[in-house]
Length: 168
Image 1 (cartoon, rainbow, N blue to C red):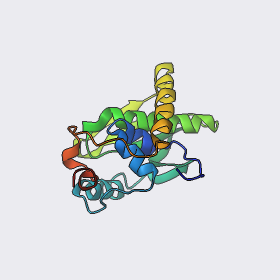
Image 2 (tube, rainbow, N blue to C red; image 1 turned 30 degrees about the vertical axis):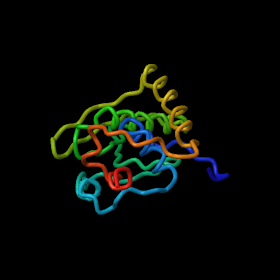
Image 3 (spheres, rainbow, N blue to C red; image 1 turned 120 degrees about the vertical axis):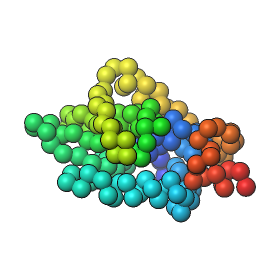
Image 4 (cartoon, rainbow, N blue to C red; image 1 turned 90 degrees about the vertical axis):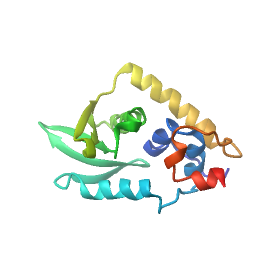
């Protein structure tokens, strides 16, 4: 591991709930196949939905997809192509809410699934904060491993942009 300290980001929280190996790979700048259909679709959805809202605000090492003000309160949104990974997306958004709170900014969150025309509110509560703290520690443990965790066949492997890296 290089001398540079790696911080936890919303992206790592997202990957943690899907595959620990992806956490290690992305944290070591081993990027997924950018030509993967799912990566391309995600990029397209991010660029072409919610045109009237501000896009990509950076907070720490994280990028929040969309944000706007509503009745004097900041509302941040995480846009995903499908609710298939809802728990992962919920915790990623909770991480962003936590990052903002640490900087003195109160906000509420919305998960957005434009293809499904669904929005779901995400609020921070004590249980979510405790889960995030556990996840942060576990992500750092994975990131500082000398080698990535061994690949494990899981249901998400079929569409994964790292598939060739893991299974070639």
